Amino acid sequence: MNTSVKEISIQEFIKSKKQVLDNYLDQALLYSFDNEKYKENMQNDSGSASKLWAAMRYSSLNGGKRIRGILCLAAFEAISLNSPMPADDNSTNLDLNKVLPIAAGIEAIHAMSLIHDDLPCMDNDSLRRGKPTCHIAYDEATALLAGDALLVEGIALCLKTDLNPASKIRVIEELTASIGARGMTGGQMIDLEQTANEEASLEELEIMHSMKTGALLKASVVIGGIAAEANNEQIEALSEYAVKIGLAFQIADDILDQESNSELLGKTACKDLAQNKTTYPKLLGLTESKAKAKELVQEAKTALLKSNINFQPLFSLADYIVERQY
Ligand code: GRG
Image 1 (cartoon, rainbow, N blue to C red):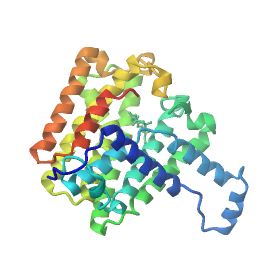
Image 2: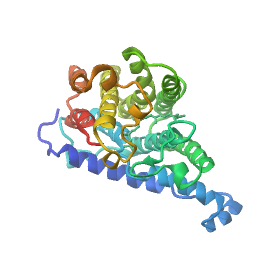
Image 3: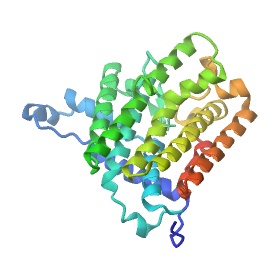
């Protein structure tokens, strides 16, 4: 543990990491082509290729909180520095080339999931991150393809890491498991069925969310640890922390849907009620839901401390996840 480090607030930590991620993604998602004919097409702004890239950029460089990417970077720093607070002098020594392409790739994949989630055949929403959703700003086919392309570009970005081949494979295994049929996609399917059919129990709700939202959040943290060469005990602790904050994140999301408004959220509020969805507030009530989220945050912190991962930004990010306003 390093006690001589300069303390920075969590707001500064989030702001600086978000900036780094935004800049990296902005560069990574520039149009670039090997094929000469395709390049010619790109000269024309109304060309089909530039429309695809424009839609991809519209939906991935548009002010998301970047929580998954930030968690990935924070977990990497936590293990690399093993210090209670990040310091400017220490942070500059970190090999960000190992983790930044992955954290950015995860954000591209997350953006993809939001585009597809908003489609008429899924959640059918018109507002995302304070702007018209991708299929409204463009059209359904373009939104579908922009999502497809962001998924693939996101995985390709993860492979740009400077990690050794064995670690790269571990990263991709972790990531693909979290978004496939055993993770996000499977969770989304359950969600669609539940919405269409019946009221879910607390246990069913938890399973659905752990797959739909929790799996990618967990993978983001664990992958940060893998990139920093965490040992098995540390990976276990990061994993436990991430499962707890993943659930807390979803409870907070349900509460915000009920208590906030569309302007602040940047997406349609009170959607759960309108769709008659089963939510934590519906099953537990607002007060108990808030208490459960706080309890999970505490448990997440304890999981880290048990393995001597004493990195303040990871604790503060857990608090932020339940205290956020949008
Ligand atoms: C990934 C292969 C693959 C398929 C995706 C459409 C779909 C299948 C899944 C939908 C998953 C989904 C939208 C989950 C909701 C997750 C959630 C709570 C999103 C909001 O996350 P925030 O608040 O958003 O971090 P920002 O805008 O801040 O990034």
